[in-house]
Length: 482
Ligand code: BYC
Image (cartoon, rainbow, N blue to C red):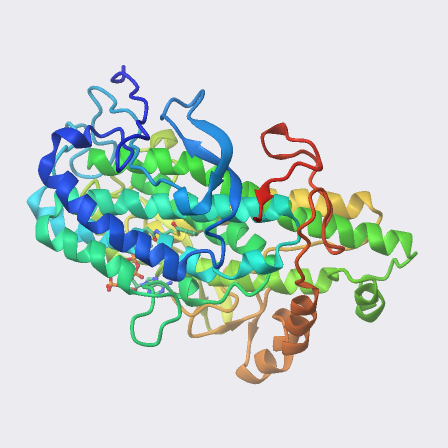
């Protein structure tokens, strides 16, 4: 049983389904934050887009059957709202030492610092990704892709609002200060960088953007699913709705890379090139060769693996036992959801060999979430490989070993090849340009990034999508550039 579904009123200054008009203190605090957010969006959000009219999906409710409407919206007029999934009556804490107790509607004092930290880390990633993608519209390979970029951007903006709502409503003055901090840090800023590594990397090309949405947004999905199981009910409801929106971001990533692969393979076939390693000939066709795509997979997968933190983490154990952050598929697990006696297999390097050791399952929760992530991502990679094999090209894209190129966690002291071999420092350096893009690879990719802004037209290096957004026809004007 759930409470009645409330439609969102876009006449309100802050559209919401949280009955904001009856919470004067919260309303005042959010209305103070709103102009600062809009200022941040102007300064760090999509560049030179204020007059563009974009065919966007806007959330109008939280009913899974029909929560969004599509229509052209002027970017400068976009409205960000606060949306929570409906409250589930009688919901109990699904895991940890409070398992079976009613969920909390207020923050339990003893878990305040822990929750605040998780909300800030989650909140920090959202504006960071918008900052990373600020300049991409200038080189969009089509209006369809440009529209998808903006859709992702505005929803990341909304996800920032989601975390700010929780901070401001439940954490008083500390929360208001954190909300300001979220607008003060900047991706890759030397003085005030974003909190997590991957969010300080550049997203210089559309290939990087698609890889980012495939891999890094998928970390978002895993982490949000884990938080959606939280015993702190407002966090659970917030994350449940965020996950609904997240699916489109992964669609953009998977189909974006898939369309690049398709175009490359078709161009190779037309030119009768079957040797994928003949990079010069493939690049002469103006498409992205498959070995370079593999290197980008290696980079984005490894940077995203770091986002799961240390494989063995007492922070993660504490958050689980407290009932604050669960596992990816917590409610589908057939164990006791307490994990005090359980073990989990964790890979690590011992005597220059990768071995599997059984570790206390509570300490290994980050490792487990990373494994779930890898499983989830491998489905998409399989679909990419089908595109290649259908074109008769003998090449396979592979996810790199989870120890490859790590800066955080159990493998960060070692050099691991994408295939999972333990290497010496020299051997790693000698092979680095086989594993990751060299400067000349990046220069080549960058040379392709030129705008293609005519309705129905696509840059040469990417195939058309199979279907339009909201079933629109091929020459639909997704963005009116004005
Ligand atoms: N870079 O015990 P540890 C998304 C810090 S993406 C820098 O290893 P823990 C999105 C860590 O913060 C999802 N620092 O790990 C995607 C801690 O510092 P403090 C984002 C790092 O705490 C695309 C210390 O190292 N959401 O939504 O168990 C577009 C020791 O930590 C890194 C979340 O991550 C790193 N890579 O887990 C838009 C969920 N890794 O606190 C959006 C919320 C670790 O001692 N966050 N550190 O100063 C969490 O659950 C946890 O904070 C982490 C780390 C999973 C990130």
